[in-house]
Amino acid sequence: MAIRETDPASAAEVVVRLENIGLSHDHGHSFILRHVDLEIRAGEFVALLGPSGVGKSTLLRVIMGLVQPSEGQVTLQSRPAQAHRPTAMVFQDAKLMPWRSVRRNVELGLEGLGLNRAERHERAMAALELVGLADRAARWPRQLSGGQRQRVGVARALTVEPDLLLMDEPFGALDAITRASLQCELLDIHTRRQGTVLFVTHDLDEALLLADRIIILHGHPAGVKGDFMVGPRPREGAAVQAMAERMRRLIAGEPDPGADAAYWQASEI
Amino acid sequence: MSQARARLLRPALGLAGLAVLFGVWEGAVRGGWIQSGFLPAPSSLGPAWLDEVRSGAWVQAIRDSLTHYLTGLVAGSVTGTLVGLLCGALPVLDGLLSGIVRVLRPIPGLAWVPFAILWFGLNTAGATFIIAISVFWINFYAAYGAVRAIDPDLYEVAAAFGHGGFWARLRTVVLPAASPGVLDGLRTGIGQAWMSVVAAELFGVPGIGARMMQASSLLATDLVVVYMLTMALLYAVTDMLFMLVRRRLLGWQG
Image 1 (cartoon, rainbow over the protein chains, first blue to last red):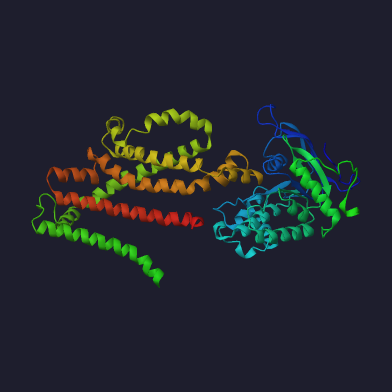
Image 2 (image 1 turned 180 degrees about the horizontal axis):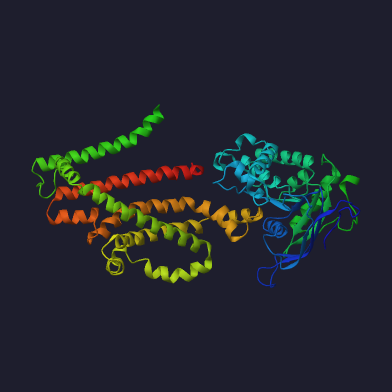
């Protein structure tokens, strides 16, 4: 039984809609994902939270179109804007192409969008500026630190101006200090850009720090087991604590004591 | 300063080693430890080389061998790399050719000599064929292995940013990612091709190998050694030129 606590009256347009998504690798004998329904609206920063190996990254790949679902349908609402991509992904280990310079890595998604070389150059540099690495544009990836590489990964995704930015545990492989500073930067960029983000993490604290809305994925096959709106920052106090405790139980697969609350929002308490 | 010194140290040591070799060799012949008919002294090589240059045979032999070498090397490298890349990237082709590869792979280039003579004759084409075959396999396996070793995540990255089709993948991932392995294969081939040159010419196609055979049948061992050193020099030059190109292409590797 999934808990839905998103604001049904929200007016923002739906960027992506998942309907009854199921994924099976053995022709329907067993499912990795099943009956996943989800809507993400423009401007939302959504965290997809769940234990390791539950299928969060797989769900991102289904949304991205890299994996075909066995059941159901993904509908992406793409702006009619020119020279952009509907989705872009930030991968866990940056996954830069070592033979491309930093700037050429950022240009990867711009190639094939009908931009000329100068326009690609300009947009890549703007994205690098945004993540504070414009002065490293000519370097090779091997010359960057792990945190810098991940910033380039963020720039590469942002530069295609995606309708939906997908992030697959982007800071999971970084040390705590670098992770904290990248989280702050990401929030800052999101506040300025007002784009739509779906951020996969298994870290509840990271989800509470970054997201406006947290979706819990759990079970075998995995499905949406909770959908929480997180109130304004700072996110502290008894109400947030109580919500965090409920999420922790859902992730652990324990019964949810707050499940009978029909409508529950930390910001309103 | 110390870094520059370290950079010079290795070639200096290499030269010192060569000097020791030639010194001991010269001393052994002069001291009567080795008979000069058995192994000519290094000091006798200069005059033998000068005679050969004056007669025009030296330059002619190099010119002939370089022709065989370059055409065989290019033909073998291009086809080997191409087939290797395609086999690595296309599982169907890989499966289709796997049996054929298994049958042909262990046959050394030299074993093809009878067919080279039958099909092409005792000429440049025949020698080129032998060289190309031995170079082909080196490049085939280098390119094939390089493609198979590509991090599959990079294909996903390429697909995520709009480069998902076969040709787009080939251009954005396969070719650049496989380039270090392919270039290593080319380099091995550059060395192997010089060995094959001698083998290919031993049966009578004019060139360094043929000249060595003639010299050895006349017991002109000094001339044999002159051509041995000639090949070493030619290899050193081609390898050095290749390394210059490689360094330019693979700057990203550091």
